[in-house]
Length: 501
Image (cartoon, rainbow, N blue to C red; front, side):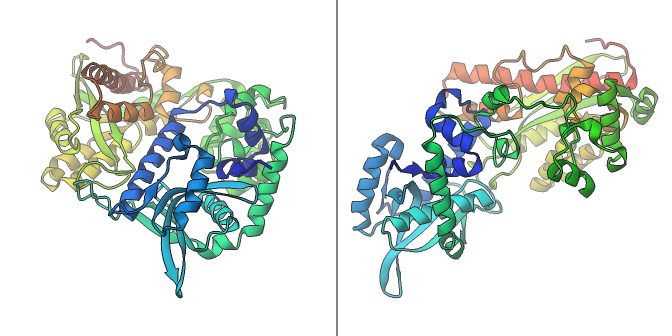
C-alpha cells in the first residue's frame, strides 16, 4: 500500500473528489494567486522557525521537494538517533506520510523523546490545523517515535519586530498533546477513507457545497463547476449576503433552500428584501433624490481618496507588528468649484517603512478643508491607525478623518442593481454605473491582492530596475483607477454632468 501524505489525507476528509483529482488529474488544478501567496508566506515562516527554535544551528533541515520524499524519511530515521533538532522530519507508517515542521529533543521523567511543533502562518489556531497536527502525531508515533508532546505555533499578532533580523517572539505555542493523541481512531478512519478513494478507478461523484470554499477555495473549483449537472436556480440565495437571521440560516443551510424565489419575505431584512425584489424583477433601484440630498451639504471643492496597503505576516520594518495594516500608496483626485478634475498621488517603493512619509504627504495634499470621499470605512481605519502611530501628526490626521464621506453608505441606502449579486463592493457597483472604467484592462495589478504582490516584488532588493519601473507604473494606474471610480460614483449620486479635466 502506497503511503498517502498528510495533505492528501486531509483532502479526502474534506472532499473525496478533491483527493482523486489531486492524484489523477492534476492538469485540472488552478492555483490562485491567493493560494500561492499563502504557500509562500508559510514557507517563509517555516524558515524563520528554524532560526527561532535552533538559534545556534545545531540541528538539520531537510527540503523534501528537493531531496526526495522517501530519502528524507530514511535520513530522519538516522537523525533521530543523534538527538538534535530536525526540521521537516519525515515519517512513514500506517499508510500515512507526514513531514513535521519542528522536532525537538526533550526528556520527560528521565526518558528521552521528542516534542513536535507544527508552525502556522496565521494569527490564531484553526480547526483544520488541529487536524493536520493530529495526523502528524499519529504517523510519527506509528513510526515508532517516542513523542512526548505536540504543539501548534502561530504568529503572535501583538509582537513588535525589534529589527536586525531578530524574530524571537514571533511565534506563540498552543499545546495540543492530549487532543492530538486522543484522535488516533479518528485519524485511522481518515487514512482508510483516503486509501479507498485513491483505489477508485473513476472520479467520485460529489455535489458542490461548502467544502468547495472552506477552509479555502478548492483549486478544482472551475472544473467542478463545469461538470456540475445539478439544476442551479436562476436566482440563487447566494445574493443574500451579509448577516442573516437564525430563521434564514435554518432555511438555507439546514433545509437546503437555494432558490431566491422560495425565500419568504418575512425572513428578510430591508437590504435583503431590496436585493430579492430587484433581482427577481431584473430592475435597478436608485433613489436619486435621496442620494442627491444626502450629499447636498458637501460642497465643492472635493477630494476623492484611496489607499493601497500591505499587511505582512512577517514584519520587515522595525517597530511594526505582524498583519499590521501599513499604507504605501494613495491616489487623490481633486474636483474644484468649476468642475475641473486634477490628480495627485503618493507611492513609496524605496523599501523603507513607508507609513510616516505617506502620512506627511497625506496631510500636505489634503489641506485643511473640503470633503474627502472614500468607499467603505477602510480609509478611515488607515488614517486613524496612522494618527495612533505618529502622535505628532495625530491632530491633522484626525481632522482628515473627520472629513471623510463614505460613498458606499450612500450606495447601500439608495442604490442597487441586479448585476451586483448582493455585493456593494466598489468592483460590484462600478460596472453598473460606469462600465467604461474597467479593471480587467489593466495589466498585472487589477485588485488589492495583486497590488500587495506587486509592492512586495518592487521593494525586493533583487528586482531589476526595469521591472521595478513597470511595477510602479501598474501600481499608479490601479490606484488612480480607484479614485476615478469614486468620482464617477459621486457624479451619478449627485446627478452632475461630465467633468472638465
